[in-house]
Image (tube, rainbow, N blue to C red):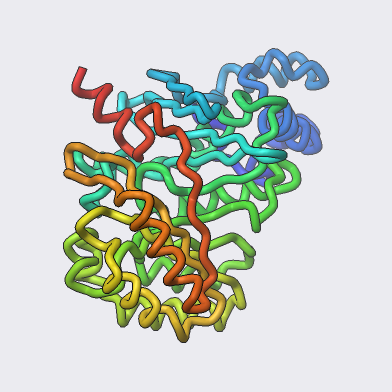
Length: 343
């Protein structure tokens, strides 16, 4: 049975015409699935009964099931989903005033092995399809207060730019006014620094946000944290970022996880300022590390975090300090999946 979310509007219109139905019903089907959150074709009451029967026979809508759910005291919800082939992925909904952000996965497992991240500890399994990515969004939307899912970040399990085609096809439906209708500037791709993918993204006709996991400002430390740096070292990555900004005139956010004893001292702050000082339209998002016992990752104390932040601010950098969310649940990416698989 085919996942109907693998079809774009034109493809669905062509299907309907081949069955002898008017193509305008495709827009109605999109509305039922993406805006009304219908999982069942029988609920699509304004479609002809024969069409509903054919759709039920030939297509599925939601192709994941909930394996486990955790809810934090701050209302952050973490979901562990089981796919049809028994692979597991995680997604998170993060509510705030007047907005809810969905953090979604693009791969089952991860091949890049960043040592502060639990996602890759169980190895890489496979890419998610466009439909599976949209499954996560659909499920999160249906489990938000009032169905109000306003932002999407590809910061869950996997490397989005390593699954480029499926991610971009999903984003076009997330952004489409006929589907989820989430503005492009409310959609963020986070990458560990896949240069060919960043170059492709610069050519897309979409004003989506780009976030790069930096986490160190010298090659030695970054390669220890992120083996991808051996293939795409900082000098090449920074040149790629300059080209991206020139082509798109869009800001890049650099994610920087503060890890005690690794990258949170005064010398690291100085290195970061030197690395980014001539990069136009750059922002740094400082993130106190989530504890990952398997990787011996712990955050610095509050005084060290504040010193690092103030040094960057005094150097004229655009800085945010991420508010810690979901700290009373398995907050780090991949932790819930690992715990579930161990049981």
